[in-house]
Image (cartoon, rainbow, N blue to C red; front, side, top):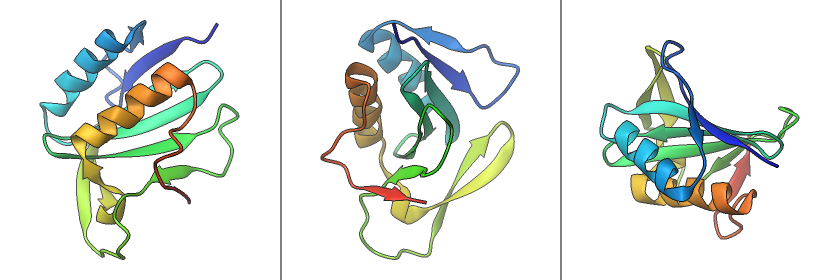
Length: 129
């Protein structure tokens, strides 16, 4: 059986076991109310989503269970936007290209889909990096 946990990029914060959608939504909601920060939704067997969350914007990156390439980033913006959005990864400012950022509501939808279906949503464009 697959287990999920939400891991904050701040190592001093404990990981949160996730057993259902309600727990996941609550945990993501708490994170997105803070500054733009990064968490991981880790699954025992289905891969890891690295998730940037802020009040309005976020991003999603997927790494398979073997932790091997290709690494996939969700992409909604089809432009070559040269701007960056900064997310906090454990105290380190981490710039993410704006073309990989999207509305935080869509980010949460992607994370919930992955949690419920144990796969990436096919209606989202994924770019290999």
